[in-house]
Image 1 (cartoon, rainbow, N blue to C red):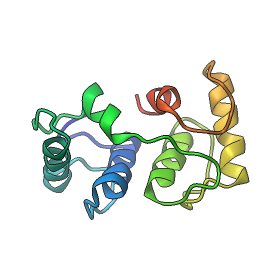
Image 2: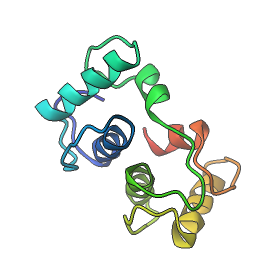
Image 3: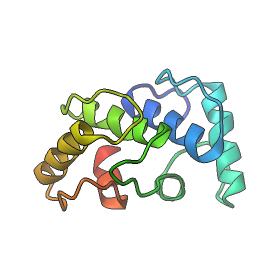
Image 4: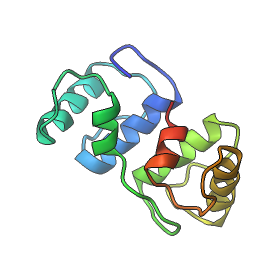
Length: 128
């Protein structure tokens, strides 16, 4: 993912940058100058190549494990991605029972452990 990209994956990226790096981005799904600057800042802070391209190393540093009951922008990223993959989920910022149900269905459909937690394997399939 890089400058100029748009869509749900960019929204998820923006939510994650806000959550993990306090980026203060407007979540609009547009990878523009502000998102580029936030990505480079995040990469620098995590001793990654600060090229502004969100590849595997940046994603690995950016995505935490998310468990039922979690709240905040990281959960909004999960909810945005679930909806983008066809599991309509309210973007509330709370990993509530409805979100866990959608998440488990997504996990089962993708051959993942349907445990309602978002680990690296689930993130990999959510963000493509």
